[in-house]
Image 1: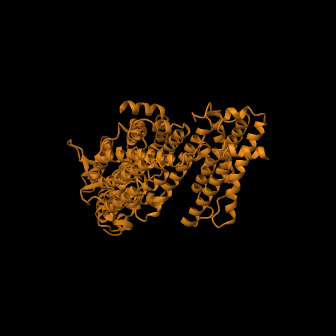
Image 2 (image 1 turned 135 degrees about the horizontal axis):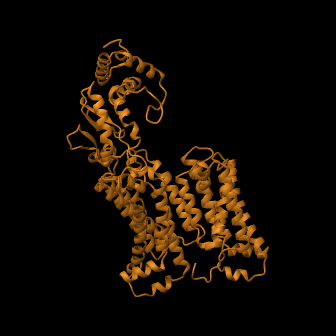
Image 3 (image 1 turned 180 degrees about the vertical axis):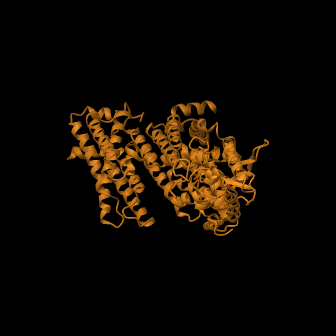
Amino acid sequence: MRWLALYARSRRVPAALGAAVVGTAVSWLLATTSSDQDPVSSTVLVLTVLLLVAVATATLGGPDDSLDRTAARPWARLRAAHLVVALGCVVLLLLATETTATRFGPIGFVVRDAAGLLGLTALAAVVVGAARSWILPLGWTLLVATFPGDGTLGEALTWPVQAPGSRPATVVAAVLGVTGLVAYAFLGSRPRTSLETP
Amino acid sequence: MSRIVGIEIRRSAAFGAALLIAVAGAIVLQATSGRWSSGWMALVMVQREYLIVLVPLTMAAGAWQSYREHRANVAELFATVPRPRALQIVPALIATGLAALVAYLVSLAAAVPRIIDTASYLPAAAFAAVAVGVLTLVVAFWLGLGLGRLRPALATAPAVAVIGFAVLAFAPQIFSSGAPAAAFFPGSGMSVFNVYDTVGGRISATQALWLVALAAAAFVLFAVRDHRFAPAALAPLVVGATLTALVMPTGDAFERAKLDPVAQQLVCTKDDGPRVCVSRANESMLREVTPKARHALELLSTTTPIVEAHEDTSTFSPKTAPAPRADTVLMNVQPDKSGHLAFPGRLELQMLTGAFGGPVRCGDSRNYTVGTVAAFFLLGREPATGLDGTEFEDPEAVQLYRDLTALPKGEADARMTAVYRASQQCRDAMAILTGGAR
């Protein structure tokens, strides 16, 4: 247990959890006071999921990844578990709003977007490092939040804002989620060489 | 100074950020080329509208730059340089400001080749709109720098972007009128409804004033050494918001400034043929429109006093309409995705239908069926649906057309003349067409 606590601390998990709870609360508060839509509009939902995934991004890398790897630990399993727990936290936080009058749902939408965006972030962390991994998911989601596309290609490209029943969107999210999970589990974030160059 | 700025550009995230923002800006513009194919003003306004995407991304770039600075642990080292504090931070502001400027202009330049052949009218307001857009992006970068310095964490950059996007998307809706929304959010209220839309000089000046206040707040956030003094950034915000609210145009003045009267002015053919006029904004289409319009005028000349064709420059918001003239037929000139005349095959039919169906001012007393029958009678073919005919089937029109063509030519022409007169006076011309009354 002590080891797990140290791991969580090295990844700044407590701060991330606090930020996620505050972020969800503020988002819920604004949605409750500014509109009586139930469930909230898809744009609000996508932005909230994106915010929570961004907070989780900060936990994907430690202060010194090269040093981390010298530890004889089952890293692949640990990293996979890390991503799954992060996904669970995002979904649970938004699931909690189901008990209120302003629901952040449907839950299928939340799971699809959270899994797809986390997978994409993890994939980016493998390629460009955890510090820059938020750029692609953020840019992609903000671009498609302004124009939801149609047709198979359009729905696939704008998957984060599609209705929960959209098959191309689900496929893209699933592919991103699984690829990100596998790549991150086996390879981990691209290591930083030293503390001075983030 | 330029040497330091050069070093700052190389060591900061400015270059990479400029590249990403330029690519994102170019993607959104190219993906929606149909919205701005009508001219320069439409292009610069649509680009302003997409600040809703570019501003959050730019703020994220600024916050990321501050986080990198924090991680690099160089603050203490830089503080040892014997230079005033202002001189230490100004190069960073210049480098990031240049990056934002270049990114905005590059994504604009990428859109230019699409309309350079067809767009002609370039008002000064377009330059003002671009300048305000550039200023918005520069200020966004600086705000990101300031916020990133206030809370240097990895998640700050994406969080700032998401919050910024939410503010830009939802906050303008708080205002019940368009004026304060446009003054405080330079990307809002930029939807292009017709080719005569513009951004008034006073609204651009108001936006620039508010952006200067935001820039001052960003400077304070970025420059303070001690976070306890960060609330000082509120002072320029309060002063700026008060001034903006005082000078912004409201009500009628705001609505009227959305329309450019010069763009609505008519430009006419100068040769000896019948006069055909289009608006200045659509001047490049005059050559395409003229032969079709002259053919329609020729058809109209036997039964009506019409000798000129003018573009219909009516607008809905604010409501304007060209003065009615008995010798003029109005034509609906719309650009298509490539800036050329949209539905060229339908122009003549639309002109003839408009002439006999009654002018727009007649409202509900216009009779579309009468207009259709008269138009196809002049065109010499049966009313048809499809590409160059009407948009929906009208069996009544077909029957009326057959009845009209069965009449002797003199009687049919006389009815046509009477129908034209009645429709110009907003009277229902159906009875005249069927021979019931004259």
